Length: 171
Image 1 (cartoon, rainbow, N blue to C red):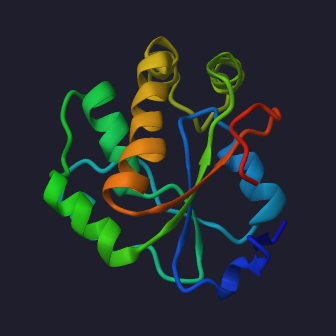
Image 2 (tube, rainbow, N blue to C red; image 1 turned 45 degrees about the vertical axis):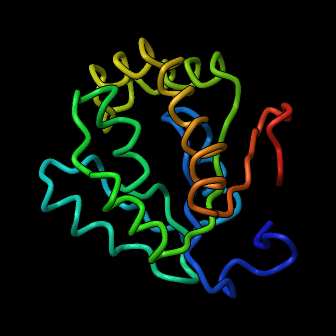
């Protein structure tokens, strides 16, 4: 690929962020198409750490997730709280103007991928089990944010990608 809508990704005047639930194929897409992508780090432990990461996306770079998005999903569903207020979230989106690629395979594929990762030494088995149990809720929250809220309320550019070839494919 190396191009988005015919333009090489490094020429975009905005950051490109690969987003999606755990097990959605983000890492595979990045390995195949964006090998220089930057990993933004795991979940923040404090509000200060979260706010520091909001400045991370830089135009012309590709990122494996962005804390501003992940916190909107995993904060309330897995951790029981969202460290990022709506105002800060909106400001970060409007300031960075990222382009998103939303990885969205069917939920059963996501669960299958997660279960295959449970034995990997760098993965947290308890977290993976939680995500598997709440996969439908996580998927619904991602869909609401990536397919409805970001494009309509904040004017964000979101492409969807389903590596299984399903109906959610813009690229």
